[in-house]
Amino acid sequence: MGHRLLIVDDEEAIVLTMKEYFETFGHQVDVARGREEAEAFLLGAPYALMIADLRLHPVRDSEGLDLLALVRERFPATRVVLFTGYATPEVVSEARRLGVDAFLQKPQALTDVARVVFGLLASRS
Image (cartoon, rainbow, N blue to C red; front, side):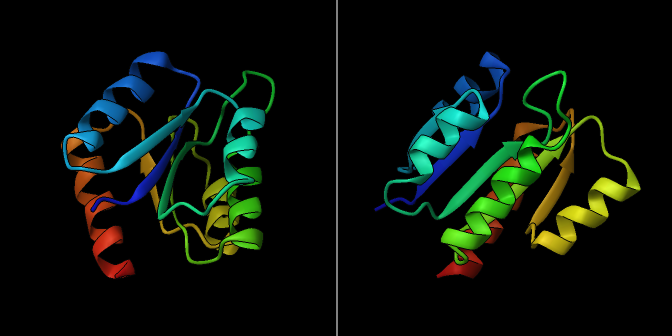
């Protein structure tokens, strides 16, 4: 049986592509297109892994960090991958301080994202 995954990104093509890809490996995948939708999913049962874009809204750069902090507070065993095209050393440092498991730059090949995800899921077991 697969793991429960949550993918959070405001780009429709990204969430749909990742959802379809990870479901082919037997994982249950929920997608959220913003912080509030993601928080609603996170109120339910814990996820094995969350992939979240750092910047979910053009005005706020830290929504992914907010979700990371929420996951760490409520579900410390959940693995978290953040990705963005807007990384600064300060943001990367804050993500590490909050306990991110992996930080990837956009754009990133789906096979590279999958390699990181499968590695994190394997180390979780």
